[in-house]
Length: 392
Image (spheres, one colour):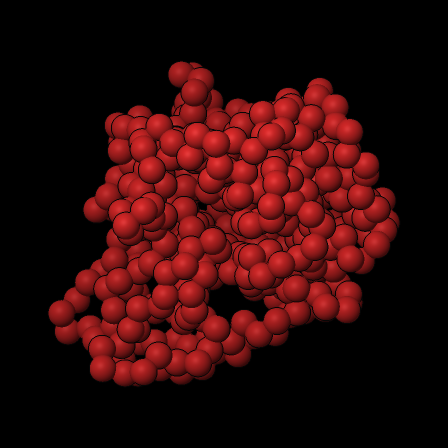
């Protein structure tokens, strides 16, 4: 892929090429009263979030323990999630059938929140990976530039959100979670449907991952006018947002992640681990291929040992992170604490690669934005839920 094509793809994947909210669409409305229109819905048969999240915790000496996990059906708050660009459906707009890619992404990015919140995740007719690939190859699929086609995903998410509010929320606190295209859609939904509206009092937090959330330079608000960036783990009604790069591979000049177009604004970076007073990131890394839309296989986690059988691994102390402002970019810099005495791997997958396995440096660790701090995010949501309950 050329630098130009990767830049176009980055914009589209982040939801920044979506049509304005005034565009109309000829697509019929989805019926979000039907359980089949949702990936995750409490008590739904075939709930994509009712899955095994067991983790092998591998210590610095190579020894390990198994960490059990279970959802809390009586969780005091809700989570509403919009997934990233994952669909391999043919055509420009995906259908409403959950395939392996949609099922895998909620496993990687969402299901673990089920220990703190009831989870609602609608299917939506997103702009597909198929269409994006065709664009970068210079052979766009018919309709790919039609504004009405670009609007359909937003309409679906807005309809699902309003159905959830009307029929399921019942005054409960809610966390909004998105990544990449999903975050881009939330950056349209929140100003239109939440910010400054009566429902804002129910916002526990907004988690905007893998997309550039604009804030006024030196301030905590911007695109979200009355929803500030989170400063503590117990703060509610605030936003957490970051894009991730290796500290050894910072954003190159052509990257669209970590900066915004408005010169008076900058991309937000909130490190969820720092909200908890620590530097190490509590990552939950996939112990399988297909991290989000990546095909990378798991590394050998401990030299000379077979990999565990659990779906996830956690490697305490191996990865640390901090928000960095450098060369016009704001991002979460991830550092692998390589130690010759530590038998664990120093290889962390998550890079986007092009033909021949060439790493697309301008994407950073986009594929594991959620995984790399998942434990921290879940813990913060737990603290926010308690703080929200205390205020009621």
